Length: 296
Image (cartoon, rainbow, N blue to C red; front, side, top):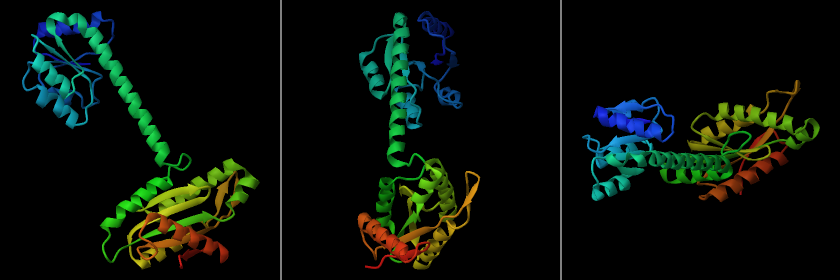
């Protein structure tokens, strides 16, 4: 907990009021507003009690500066006298409460309410972050889900130059069901994780990889020439060929890949995905372990 109070006697009263409330806290003192962010450099305090009369810590320079810098610490403001307009300004600016110093019996409950509210906000934010991750990322591999890959593809359409292309590579592990059936799903999951590491090495940081389902993946290749698209298609298929070590056994897998190109094969996401899927099955029909471009 951080207390912003320059008067020694008033500071002692605030510390005592918090203590009387029965909450054990470690108190840090700040003498002026410029110390607030400095004292929070190792992590913001759980709560700030601030004397509103210390310049320049006012509604505009205090809370606003902290919020702009991403510090969401609850702030309880204390004042020497009641000022209804100022209290409203503080609350609207983001203060958790506004108290009068001669009524510090309210400080303990105010601190408790502010901390509980903050804990609920943090819990809600954590749940929302977890839900966002589950919605957008594959739990097993950590790769993008289809919906997030589609979103990234849509965002690329308007920024392409006339001589640039986008490519969608669909890759499916050949006979992946046999791995699960003969070695078990745990072994199949191990294979998928090893495949992901190979794909990440193959495509580099600029491209996006998605797990679509089972042993099926998609790679979004951005701003590429046709020669670069062919080179990546070859490299992706080749990345599956080295042996894998699974359950103390050496196994070999291959993959078939289908490639669609924007804008030649479609100007919408679903058209490009459908074209890549058709091309992938064409590669399987031709004997697997290869890539094919979409042909209408």
